[in-house]
Image 1 (spheres, rainbow, N blue to C red):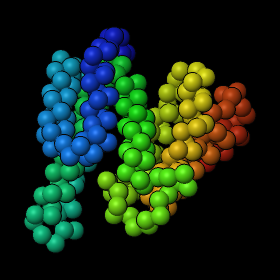
Image 2 (cartoon, helix red, strand yellow):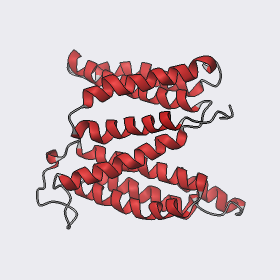
Image 3 (cartoon, rainbow, N blue to C red):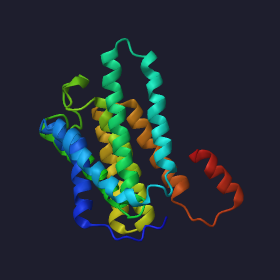
Length: 237
């Protein structure tokens, strides 16, 4: 469906605020429950109101994520106890709600940019928090080498960096302005610093890989030979 409705700046700003609170400010200010049990459900209700009139149209993405959620019940055989399973399942349910928010708010109205901006800003704020907490110094990493010192799970920082990197790429390919080009060059370096500091090998590999693929194969002139298109498609895959 064409997204013809103009997005509300107020709602867009609220989307950005919720993402920043979920990824950075909530954990830092010890307000995770307010975010996950208050702001996130509120945004989900708003998404449902947006989606209620057109729910029957183009709902493939929602059905796919609903199927993933139902399949997650099979992981009960992985956990040693019932409480562990419920804890993990509640996290997955939260992810499904967060996913529905995106689907519900972007089906008919173009709120996509706000979600990407929120992710980029949240990782920048996380970086500033890491500096304030002494986890990043002039030598990139602090002298303390244990990974439990971080506010979040050490790998979570790198995964957020990967998502923010994809957001940068999306915004640049859509808007093609110089500011985004500069950010697309500079911010991945910041992402690498974060991945290096948190000692995340997966984060380092993913950040380097997606940026290399982007600059070598994605961000290129569309008028290329069929052979190069085929090679590019294989490498991206």
